[in-house]
Length: 135
Ligand SMILES: [Ca+2]
Image (cartoon, rainbow, N blue to C red):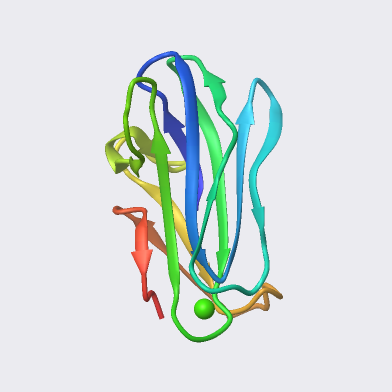
């Protein structure tokens, strides 16, 4: 997934992915890429949680790369906002593609293998950011 998320308030945020198979989560904060999750390998559904990151009430570029290598498939992107007790799916209303307006969701790109082979990906606007069994 590729685009931007809008933090509704300043404070500490944590990001979480649940992935089967592999995933990267990269945030761009003040011009620098932060690899929030680095788990680009074959695995059963696994949860990874970023360290807390301070965000202003602003939009931040985000990239969530995911691939599926066999068996089940899961790709979930969640966050915990300041004051939240639990993680929740990042709502599409706070997201934007690189070309769309706020609320258009992130552009999902799901790959059938880790090699990024041409023709192996399925790309669509992801309005839920909570894909499971996408194949
Ligand atoms: Ca799998």
